Image 1: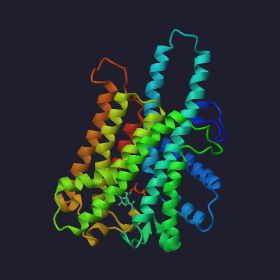
Image 2: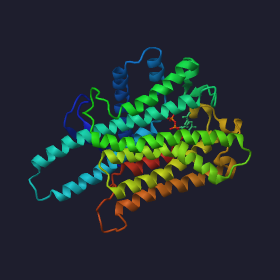
Image 3: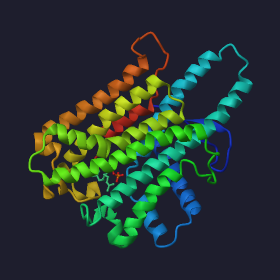
Image 4: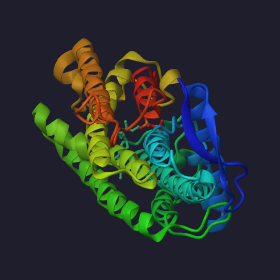
Length: 358
Ligand code: GRG
């Protein structure tokens, strides 16, 4: 599989991009992770947080997270970008392409940098939710991403503030002028904000519904699904849509991204329930079997491990189908508005998610 991403030749300043082709999903994901690690440092330099707040933030942001949501932003960005560039190429076939190519490159550089901001934003928000979720007043967990949780490594007040400031930074990063990022595009930034803010709010609503459900003895599968649509699904939806918007996704492309995200958001949660009972603490990097210990309502509790595994697989397949349908735009002879090509980062991402072990 080959995926394409527009990538700055260096990460300093507004420099026209090269189109870099990656030979494998691992290579593509590695490049996204490396860029994100650099951007996290740029952000902490910019934010000038006092100690030990900055240490706690760096600690939680640089643990062994899988970076699923930034990878979703980058994959949606790469797929839509590659699809739309293909269309531009077709359109420009008869035109002198020299000037157009330079315009496209400059435009893409700014788009790519907006996708870097979006990737950073979703990871900041996600990490804040994990830090708060682990606090003694929530799940009271001591292990996360293979290391002691923030309130254990630091103290409860610092962990609470770290979560708070990560959340604030998640919004700030979309419009701050920071070194190594092209000046933010106000039009894209406002679209990103409109996607991100309500879904960040839905994540917290989902957490409340989850806490309410813990107190109730008997909840239906539909209720569980509604909880996870908000708690886990909303941010996944935000990640895919934000990546698409940065690459200039059309309305049908956005609808396909949203539909795909809804399926894989739920699939991800069902899979999480399965992994909690089938994997070890070492592999998970967080306590195995904690759902049962906390008597949580999970898909495994509803339907058993085998059926929950099948359910996750069928949801991933539905997510893939949403993308595939858009690739052919309902008409196998049409290439208009298709999401990706044979080198589709999104389809590769779904495969990678399905094969995850933690
Ligand atoms: C605002 C306190 C608060 C919570 C919001 C998202 C959330 C609700 C709580 C986090 C805990 C949790 C179990 C969420 C379910 C979503 C989920 C499966 C999170 C784990 O995500 P991964 O697997 O984690 O992507 P890494 O560590 O790899 O980033």
